[in-house]
Length: 384
Image (tube, rainbow, N blue to C red; front, top):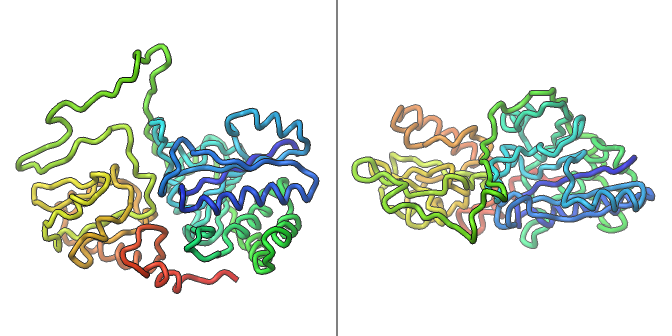
């Protein structure tokens, strides 16, 4: 078999336990077949905070020597399978080290598999997933972004369902029978065994040809070499009065041009500017300074600075003025205010459609009121 590596990309804190269960489940199941393995986590270049993209790995080998050789690296430099637990991460991962936007499939080997938990189609996902020079398989496991494993969230079997799908898309790793035996022994839930078996049959596969996918070049920054770094620690301050426009042009605070932050969010605020009372609460309360004051006095969320925390929606006193909408609905970070100014009727039609779809889709973070989680999960499809 040689060494097989799997990476799990997830939302920091929210999906940490879920990612750990998957990686440990792979290792425990591999041992049933006489293989050896290791499961470990790392930050994916980012501190593991609310919503920040993070990673865990599982590496499986036939012998301890092969495993030790592979684990001598900081992390795998390429993987056979990438598992994405939140489909909004398909747009890419913002690097804490300010390297730019990192494609979700960056480490994926030729003919490897990208397994995504999503309700989107393969074509829709590929509008976000950046191109690669080689082909691979896109596998889709139908479901919403899960927080299963956190103490306040129900167990929806996402861990078992991912393992069952993995048995189908990476049969060289571990067989379905070994996953089922591991689940019975360690998780002691026959229902999870059934969920794993069912997902191995229901996972949808799509071949991705070389060059197919999002054609945009991910933004990147040229980092200094060790020969170019200055002595001591240097933090450049913004010149006084720089970074914003004032007066009749409105106000835009100075922001770091290298750290975008938007890959943190699973939802984004959309604003009904016609109902805005210009109370300024969203602007004052936003923890990331993501709102710009427009010449009209309404507040435009800057989508490169917004992390999707939903504080603006929670503090807005006008019902329906700010609504959090799934990030999967959008393909860019364009200004909502500018779209509203160009054509208010067209903007209103789009806004109404987005809000209607948002009310149909369970939210994975940023709840508006106490009890909303219970209300929304009651409508979700039960996993049998």
